[in-house]
Amino acid sequence: MSLERDEELFPRTAAPLGWLVGAGAVARRAWLGRRGQRLDAPVISVGNLTVGGTGKTPVVQRVAEWLAGAGLHAAVLSRGYARPRPVAGVTRVSKCGRLEALRWELAGDEPWMLAQALAHASVYVAADRLAAGRAALADGAQVLLLDDGFQHLRLARDLDIVCLRGDEGRLRVLPAGPLREPPRALAAAHAAVRVSPWRGAEAEDAAGGGPGSEEARAARALERLRRRLGPEALWCEAELEPREVRLSDGQVLPPAALRGERVGLLCGIARHGRFVATVGALGARVEAIHARRDHHLFEAAELESLRQDLLWVTTEKDAVRLPREFGAAVLRVGLRFTREGEELRGRVLGAARPGPRAGGTG
Image (tube, rainbow, N blue to C red):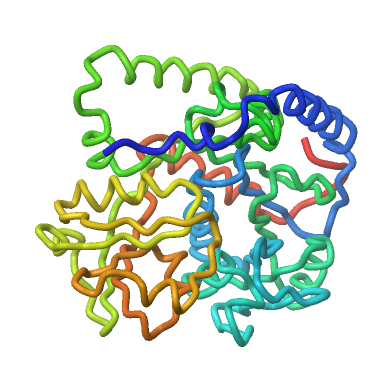
């Protein structure tokens, strides 16, 4: 059961255009990187280099939980990418853990999921995240958490965290590959988090690869990425491990409950192969996979065409976009740091301390 190589979905013939886009991204960062506008609160950004599939949202959630644990009112600022019903101005999805948006379509799947998960933070959505930040400060926010913010250079930040897949060094820039900008941009980051699949899924995917082959190449690729970071930047590692299965009737079961079950997998996420590998490694009998593009809106007719004799399992993000009556089981995953998690927490809380703010991002 191999993980998909999504770079294969991009045309190799677009490589020259990718070089031009990459050069433009480098020039843009050089020009705007130190000209971001300051707001009257610390700003922490969590972003990535690729267009999706790095585990960014769980990292945003963990950072928000660290801030809440320190007694700080954090506001997550999101652009609400791919929301079906965007509205002008700023949408306050939640305030201090209380949902205020009427429907997920007004917020987007990821902001809605974060608003439901974060009991003490607020979530705002706007195309203009400076406006969202000002609205959050007017509501009493003490720290601004910029979701998907590494390329959002208009807003200066105090801590830049970049989430990595680990293979960015061999990928091409859009439209020739999934990179938003070349890996050299990592020099602007204060911390990098390599988010990997659950080790059980990795072990299954690596079976038959042979010692010193794929594993050695992956290690070399990671080392090259680490060298892209500045000398003071922090390198962290984490994995997404299964935590629980929520059934449509409200029951909460351990992930091991999927062992031996005949299941179908329903997902519209950036790298669905990780989800497939995880469910397979849990011992489920995967008999059907219905995978669509990231943020796909599942239609009623599409769902009615699926096999009725299987337990359909989906992700938390996909569950947001599914009608309640469909009745899928939701596999929830959690972030577990395996390297420098406590150090990153310390840097997050250090950046969140109030103090004099001047100039742009470092």
